[in-house]
Length: 174
Length: 317
Image 1 (cartoon, chains in turn brown, blue):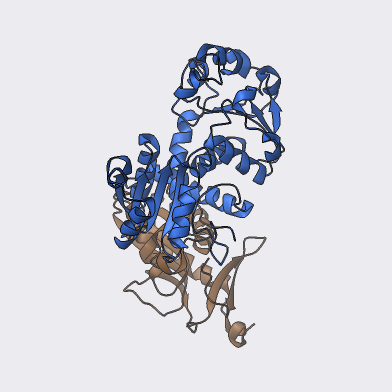
Image 2 (image 1 turned 90 degrees about the vertical axis):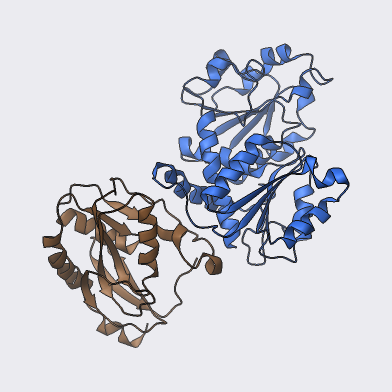
């Protein structure tokens, strides 16, 4: 446990803000895709509460990571599922925490292997800064600077409620 | 000596045989293959994992089918694939196996897929490349010993249709003696906790002491088939059909060929597997091979995903 744990924002409030921003920008035909694991939880709830008609998509970006040569393949790869036609569609990509931007880069590369989207937008619960790529989120629940060595993680409780936790362990690699 | 397949961190360094692989490693390969199966539904069927890596298919023994599946798997991972049909090249000029390997290592190979008529040849290569920790060896069939990716794709197929291993009865039928496929499958099944593994075949085509692999032995197929969930047929190699171990192919079919009548003794939802290429009318009746219980073609499709899983796990370790 580290000191600024107590200053972490309430994930439910961030979610409410994100939902407020996204609501006027989507249609039932928007393709909503969550990046596993935290982004998929968020996307699942956004998909439900926004009344999206297209089925929910999920991406596991393990096959597109740029650090494969350093870290190898994730121990826990799950199949990606994009159960709608991506071609020409407005796609809302959802992730829990935006940090270096590398995950989003990988997700976009994977998405293009399903087709050529009309437009991709990015919705994140938290923008924690520390970008290493020119990537920005169109919709953000909040901004919250976190020192580089810490990991900010979204958790989902038994009732589906979101919480954020901070840990000082190294980023989980395998 | 430690397990030559694992590196110092206990990760998979080479895939040489299913025997000796921990249960978690087998399950990790099968779970990873799940993610590759879905790629076939996409516009682009490739992922960039092995971009810039060179995979050498070293086939000291001909096998167009196995070589092709490895080649497709490597290409779907974006690797560069170089096929060497060694029968017709260096070794016929007298170059030794390990000299060939040294030359290819010097060309910065990242992975060798090795098929060899001698049991143990892939082990010898794996030992030889120890000074190159980023070089990985996959056994694509060595002599009578092992064919681990075939064993793994059989396990994947069984899990796909039967979900759990812990309640299954599996019958492996035919020429177990000469079959590297049978050995790899049996080791996998016992490692994953299948409680009832049976081998069925004539005495002349079962290895001595086969019971020590943890299997029940049947010479009467009608008894051995009773109530099984999975029927794994083996190929009867042409040279055995009229050799000293069997009276004739027709006799073999009578006793050990899988007909609809014999299949009816298995569970109603039993699946039938065959590693290919099939000898219709020798080990399997066409009515079964093309029938509703057959999962022989899905095996081929899953084989690509399983080989992709193996190569991507190896390349990352």
